[in-house]
Image 1 (tube, rainbow, N blue to C red):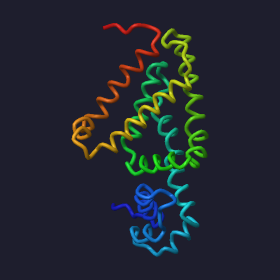
Image 2: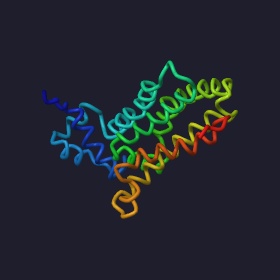
Image 3: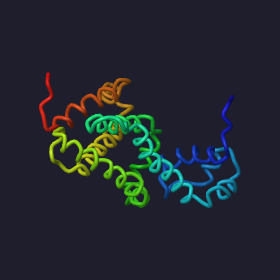
Image 4: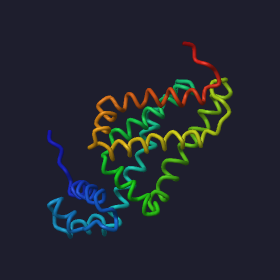
Length: 208
């Protein structure tokens, strides 16, 4: 059965493209309405205005990150497997995320990060740091992980994943971009990321 697309979904899809191209300040409600093929009044009915629509789009992404990570976190595994699961699921989340969200994220950060500050600490960093503390403390007690700062470690890793994807999107239409960021990129990226990071956090040498 064909999924019925609601007016709100049409508006968000059109707005995603508009905000990615023009940012919050440069976006125009007229263009969003035209792209969504609706009357402009419908946008104000559902979202009150441009800024409310922008906030709704960003909120939807930020509030979905941690539940996605948590859904892939195994309860019956040890610290190392849990660490792997979080990193794997975050890479997959970024991989599946519409590129326009990343473009909006870049514009948001360049403009001072008003909504990044509003959503990222509460919905991503705070719960993630809590999980990271538990995983790393268990790992240290079991002699698996070194005594390093869990919060800084995860911020370093997540930042690396996000910025690598920014480079991928930005260079996607260049020769070097097409060469490096091919269909195998995310598999290769995971493999290399784990090889680098795990060497730094393990308290033991992996057997060959």
